[in-house]
Image (cartoon, rainbow over the protein chains, first blue to last red):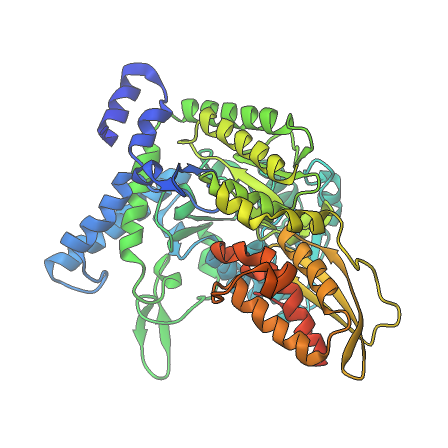
Length: 420
Length: 149
């Protein structure tokens, strides 16, 4: 078995990126399903975990388990150091200016809820507007709807075109004097569209409006530089970038986070408490009430290490090739139609088939060992826009191969055979 | 593939392609929606009931092959049945798709036997049962749409 070190060495020896070698470090990829070799193409739902991440979780509970920011004892100090060390890795990973801008929470969903609950309730009032796009995942719709219902503000939606791209002129037109915040997916989970977020942030900023980016589907595919994007908030989840579930990050510009009230109250987020008055802790702890998810944060650290060890030019090139190949061969199957044909896409091929419902396709593919997502992908408005109830979504990670896409194509032909 | 063939029986594929009683019933005495929010299956069931007998039944909507064929087969089996018979048939069907029936034959179950394979696919039980749950709630004169989630 190849180790992670072998991959680093092979990279150093100039071979760029070797998916076969990478696959060796993901134990689950050797699994069989219904007696067939697993072909895991549901990476937009969650990615698999490399050995190093699994080991980090195991090591934490074996050797380090202790509560953080509290004890004077050795284990607590070590655990605190490890936990805060991951904050530093996260800051470097997205090029934030300060560790104070890195808030650990459960995932992208909680990050968006934090911004809607804290920033939203202090800055969005009756008659004000929140602008999102027609591409959003439910997690970037519902928290804003809840805010609007609570405050009497209005949710505006920038429409998408037939390719699944946000119509930028409409987006700009919808930013008005009452807009208080803009929230946009960096990459669409349902279609794979990459939004031109840097340009969209600039448009919003030209009107003085802050922008939240939902980065859940972007982080596994390209390197993020929040200062280059100049976004005000960036939310993402570890489990979609080879890390554990239950941990994610909200990045926020320090000046904005400083001005926001806490989202939850409890231990760790306070400096002093009396029954009369509580003084809140500094950033980022102000937003991290209670004992955090220490183990998964440390696992997240191993995921950052894993990604940092890769040659990203080679990875991007490989993933792009994979997506282009998949789009070609899937799109060439008679009776299959790809939904979402944006000029800039990442990691996703969503499709429908004449006369066969996605759910039936999913069941038949599953029996071939192929894991895909079928349904509305928590993006019902996207489905409504295209007038379909659901799609089949194949989503790719850096460990997928062209052979696996060929397996998927064979599986789609097996579906056709069942339904003649 | 054999389990798949058991699931996608010829009769299911045929009813999916050409669903029976697939229309609106203008003089329905009960109309109820059934949907599965997860996969988007969505049907409207129409029932005409006179003296506790289902004198006519039809449905409209869209969904996967299992849910559509199940709705179609159900309509063909329920016409002319009493409410009590329909209720018993619901129970039989439910046991069939959840794997609780031991005697599975065409003689005892008729066309329902085609759905025996569903029990091997737990994720698809709700597809097969959607129309049946909707029918039972409609017979009970419930007006809330039925959701299988």
